Image 1: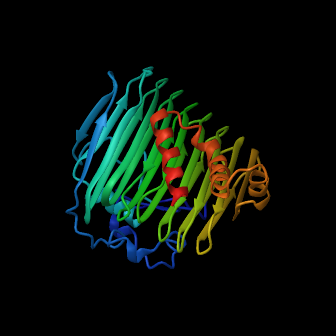
Image 2 (image 1 turned 180 degrees about the vertical axis):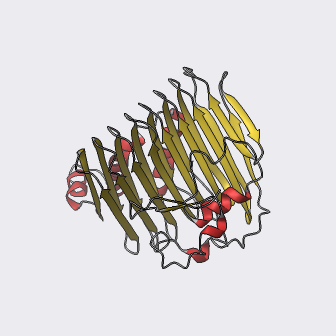
Image 3 (image 1 turned 90 degrees about the vertical axis):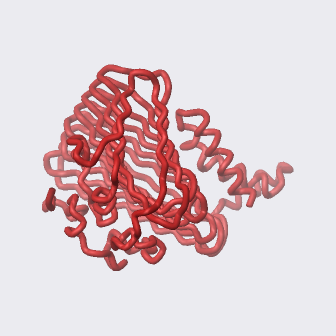
Length: 374
């Protein structure tokens, strides 16, 4: 599979399954300028020894198909073509892929759980997952990442006509972990996709959710919550590529940062191509800075190639805790630490409260409380 280009856009023009089609990043490239390459342990330049150990366990309700397949399976790499060198490296290096299929019109009563556990960060590991939701089916999937790892992977979500998929991707790695992941959803006619990305643990975590449309009427909602601690780098690079008419997208990512050299990066790219009349899109990123010494980079990009849109906009804001909010609570007898925790939980709580799996929602709430107690 060779190089694929989209010359009508200035964003994300290159895609290929071949590692050689991408130059080794230097850090001067737009897509790599915020990422600390020296901390990627060679994932970006192909020098990482592929001897890491990552174990994937799946629980799925009755009727859902779970397969472990080899590299030659025809379902792999069809919905998503890698857009950078690490993604292409992951595609060329995995040994076994996971394919989960929700059959037509099925509505499982319980969510599908995919637990990815790293058993050590010394060597690199690579993964590939395909989740197919056939027409008119509905499903919820939890991708739960834990342990220590140096890990790069690609995840493909294929959502059929009239189908609905909710995905919760939780990055709860140990402090020594590095994780780079592309998570792509391809939506058929009238399909719905809701994605939650929650990044809490790890040394360097770079998640790239993306959406493309394969028919009119598709609806994508992308939500994210992250909390960066001292020295931690959390990066989220989103792409919504509107190629079909009368589709909708909403993006809302919110983060908090505390401690020296805590770094959060959010890049939100939306393309509305000439053929995508009637598009309705909006993206938002907010960052709450809790201490000195942190860094936030937030870059929304909106490229409109047609004049016939329903609505399009973006916003980004980063700032400190509101002293008036804290004063209001303290004036009513609430101690400072408690008031601070209440404000931060309220700020993140609207998104956290929307997580549809109760045990994951409660786990994220507890993790945020633990962060604030440090």
